[in-house]
Amino acid sequence: MATNGEQQKQQNQESRHQEVGHKSLLQSDALYQYILETSVYPREPEAMKELRELTAKHPWNIMTTSADEGQFLNMLLKLINAKNTMEIGVYTGYSLLATALAIPEDGKILAMDINRENYELGLPVIQKAGVAHKIEFKEGPALPVLDQMVEDKKNHGAYDFIFVDADKDNYLNYHKRLIDLVKVGGLIGYDNTLWNGSVVAPPDAPLRKYVRYYRDFVLELNKALAADPRIEICMLPVGDGITLCRRVS
Ligand SMILES: C[S@@+](CC[C@H](N)C(=O)[O-])C[C@H]1O[C@@H](n2cnc3c(N)ncnc32)[C@H](O)[C@@H]1O
Image (cartoon, rainbow, N blue to C red; front, side, top):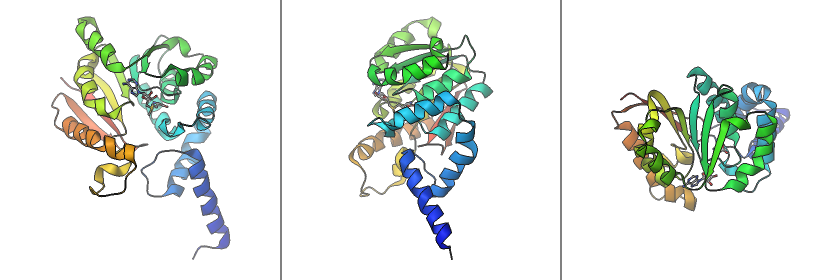
């Protein structure tokens, strides 16, 4: 039986968990907190911490990439020596900063979002970190930009890494275009592919409206990725689920 002290400790951990406002599919809040406190926060670059704390005060903070996923992306980009990258869905820029810090001085990120205001909220932190020169931000819906890019053959196979974290109802449309833009051997990462765990919820489960709305799109995407012979895939339960797609042909 847990002592009073242990119960108090667990309660404290759970309330901290809620404060973080993170996304995690782990069943145990305490375990997730352990990951954050043991492995993520002690090694989080100062600028990412500052951006995370700034974002936590924003009303839409639930949209931010979680700190453990930020750490994962940062490591992944270094492992694959990514240089030319793209991000669809920036918000205040936490995953963008994780990317910008991982790629070399002359690396590039084409970053797209329909909302410039949120990007500009995080921009001073990115500038202070000395990595803003790697970013080209385009305001507006990503799909028309991708259409234009696909028309020009010189963009084909130009990207080492593409992170997609935006409108889930368009992921398959993005995939149709991104598969030409990522290089053979390069990676596309689709975020939220376990969509709050709702991918396995029974049809009558009480889901939040936006979770229910996007669930079918996520299910369709997951099926399509699994059946696409042009990629190898790996679905990871990091954050809200991220599916890595390595282009093979
Ligand atoms: C989950 S947030 C991105 C979180 C971000 N990766 C981070 O690390 O904080 C999703 C973002 O997608 C953007 N978005 C929605 N529809 C879009 C579209 N059609 N084209 C580009 N961005 C879009 C939203 O404005 C929002 O900022």
